Image (cartoon, rainbow, N blue to C red; front, side, top):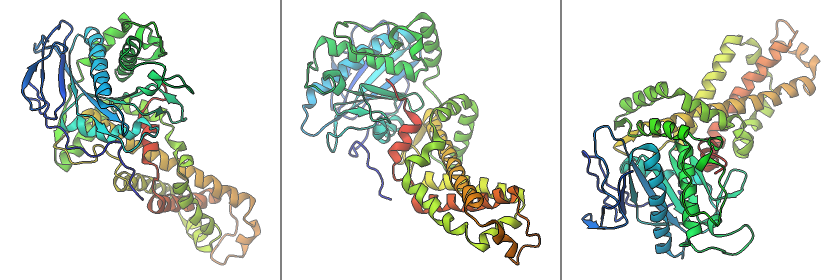
Length: 455
């Protein structure tokens, strides 16, 4: 299978490590500090030296009890687009947004704007197509949250164009300027530097980051369903109840990480799952993973095709009828897990895809969730193939044919026997689908698993 490309071309990455209270971004980007009480500060020039910048803030509290949240802003622009206006828009939106978030969370927010990266084309994209680069920046820099700003259309899994989407599990937000500047079906009607676009973009960013922190549309205030308001000139506040929740979550944002080493990382994955079972389960339930085979025709075809031959094979019936129910069940469970592991590693569905010295806990939870989604998808594939096999056994296969097979001591075949034979053949189909079909659409899987379907 050809590997799906990242939305970004591969960049040299950032080199930033946390050392006490002083962080620097060595990527030519702009670093902005925001504190609830801040009004002025310093930034960083492209060569890493500090410079005065009235638009940044540095009077942030560095007390031991004050959490600090690092936000990376990645800019992905279409070929030939004007880069500077998009860069200015992204920086201004981040500053306006984190001002409200700093007040709501009582935390120090630091924004790091990376150098813009060009996209291969201006085609619409799902937010999942930005995950590889976002994940790489999160573990290398490291960032607690990543905001991707792009000028290409952003679509949901139902192919609806939206202003932005958020992944609470991956802590990634994608904002598109296309719907902020244009009404559907019309030409550009607003300027990127207009006051209406500025404050609606900041409101959208705060709204999406609220989703990352666990707030929902029923929480009111800025979390009300987003719609463009041409008269908006400020970011709506969070409700008081939501603010208390945000402060609790913000205090847990700077999290544990694990350095390189297979055994150490495996133990870190297991312990992270034990500490955060609700996060993984809720994302898994929202992912509709058992229905994934219906969206992957090559995987389903590779699974069903050989079973249509095996169901009319005497050898398959002989093995299936002579298996015990326990053996057949263990074989099915083992095959589903093996197929999920095969797809996870062969298709390179774990994050980040490039080697990294450290990996953070929330990125570990992404990997754990993706694995369980694959397990649920393979279980769904098993049920799909098994249903087809059982239908053939009951409606198509000649019932009297079994009485003539000399390998049967008892020619009577009951419903339990038919289910066991169908399950055995379906298990072989799942293995065949994972090995021969694979997943031809990695991005569909990631979008299905990790991103909300509404702004």
